[in-house]
Length: 323
Image (tube, rainbow, N blue to C red):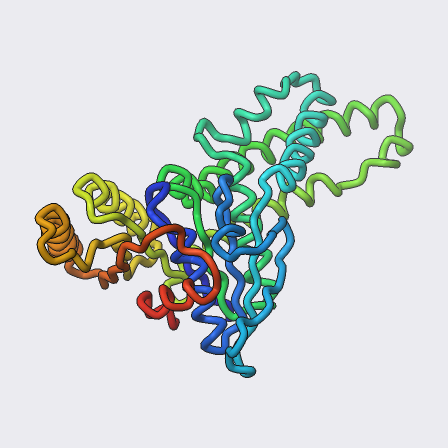
């Protein structure tokens, strides 16, 4: 079975670095691994120093790596590439409602599918691809570099929200279809049944089933783990506490916190450096106290961007990413 690892947290804390480093380490350990960016502001290409697109691409093994290593693949989701599918489903629903005399404009259909929640096409695309990549069975592990905290919470809310919206939509659609079929039969007789295929209805049901499958994967502790990335700052601790609580309320497994950019080596004689070092030590101690049941991993602050396979591999070693 394919395992899933999600990295989440506030924007700019280093989720992309952690996801890329984890994926590279897993591949180096012999597992076929896919790393996925679901953040609309992609930086995975920069981290891996390669051009990525909406389809998984295999990266060449790093020079000197073990020939028995697993493969490393990467992909950046393009939300627009997936949005058309859901727009087509919405249009199919609206067409059937109109055939029964129920008029909905595009904005009203959009509200129906959103269920009053702020779910967006990027979250839907992420869930759709989660199911696709995991159930294809082409990889041993799929590592997700998720969007910032607010988007992440929406992603995990989406299956339930969309499931309820689709249940309502299908009920309305069924009523409209029965009324429309009765009217057509009364006017045209048996000829009314020609051309009344059920492709769109099956599409709606398939869509709902895939969302339910996504929820099963997200809440399966044997297959899915969510890791929270944060900086050694007081506000970040509070935000991470809310994120962990929300994920656990959704029955998502959270075992690990990654504290990134910890200042570890102050220069001798630099009082400012020493003060910053001590402050970071205090914040890390506070994090361990706030989350006593979670493993806390620290990553040192580095000069410049963390880019390239060699650098990422060293970060992966600190993450102890074997699963």
